[in-house]
Image (cartoon, rainbow, N blue to C red; front, top):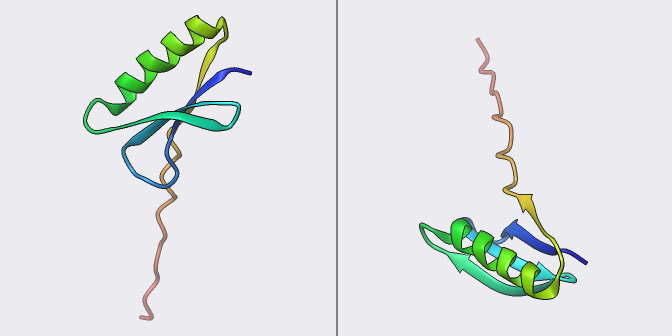
Length: 69
């Protein structure tokens, strides 16, 4: 199973490195994504696996409001 790099659904700005749906390590702060990318690649190399990035969730579409008039 590949190593997964994903943005945390619970905490904005936190990135997780997971293996078999188990979070191995989390990073937060200004360089969180870069650290998570490096560590996921290192782990994938050690386990002779691949690292894949799930990406950051998209921002929701803006909602339009109409006022009576």
